[in-house]
Image (tube, rainbow, N blue to C red):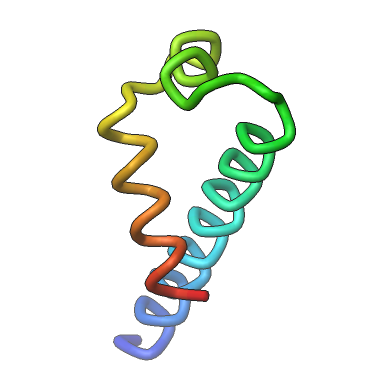
Length: 59
C-alpha cells in the first residue's frame, strides 16, 4: 500500500512541475514582465519565483 501512495504522490508532483513549466514558458512568450504576467494570471510574484526555482531544480 505504501508503494501505491508513493507513486501517486510522485505523479502529482510531476504533473504540478509540468503545469508550472507551462506557466513559466507562457510568461516568457508573453512579452510581459513577470509582475505584469502574474497580475493578469492571478499569481503572486513570490509564488511565481518559488515555482521557477523548483522547476529549475528539477530540470
